[in-house]
Length: 191
Length: 211
Image 1 (cartoon, rainbow over the protein chains, first blue to last red):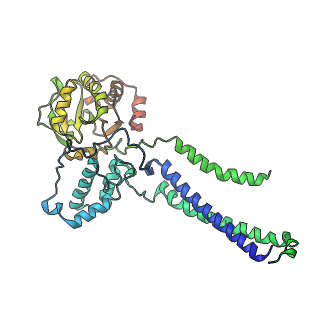
Image 2 (spheres, rainbow over the protein chains, first blue to last red):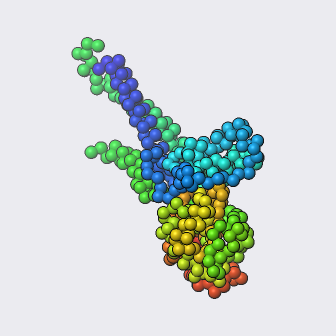
């Protein structure tokens, strides 16, 4: 076998191994997300939990009594800040949807709470902390990088690095062995 | 067989298989509440359904959690559109009657509903012994980290959330939890409360998990 064939074989091996490593990394991250109580990802096609709020039933529509002034109700800056925070909070009665994107009654009410707290001078982090104190870290769509959660962020990187080291080791082994074993075969090679 | 390779493969696969096996033991619908063990969120809500007899409070009266300090409080979130609330209604109403005269306050909190429908539902169900209050905009529900109804919170005499129960309660569950909280309450607030084993009380207050 020629050096060119050896190189192409090594490159194919490298590409396959990289694909495998990235697959394992993504898979491991998904498993962690699914198995961690606080970080559970929810499939959108799963049936809703047995309990739940009415889904925007006209007959049951409840008038929300807020503390916002008329100016605050129509303030585009406050609306944008509310949307930004609401996009990070999970709707408790939905499946993996932010309260910003959910039409459910509870999500609307939670958005109103977000808006009221921002209007009262709380920062985005303080509003999120309020919801975490009531619902736990589960309420955050994106897990915070501390404690056990660090594993979710670090594991894919570690797996890719480990895969790269493994590949270097394997490729070196292949290229070191090939000249001695392929020597006689190379005589009749036309390449 | 290459034992070295087999060992490496097994050592690599074991943590992944272990992780998957651990995942199978967890209930994806079970969401732990951070509230048990903490100070209960305060509220001041208006009574819309007065209750009956000794447990009654006038409609329009404001119930403040701060005024209930020294009592065990059973806070039941419900709605007229909630089917599971029908299952627990008579159990809660009956068990509340049996605690009349004791330092226990049962309180219904209407969740995402209108008082008229709540009142009609109570009449349809044959009445309710304890009062119910309205929670406009679900502010108190959100303060208690509510996911849906029915959910029942048991607050101890010092105003802390001791337990959260998700789903319909039974008389047995309510009695066990209320009795254990009465037994653990300071002497001044414990009036003829049935004795509950101290070990059970401690174990359950640590659990703080709905059933």
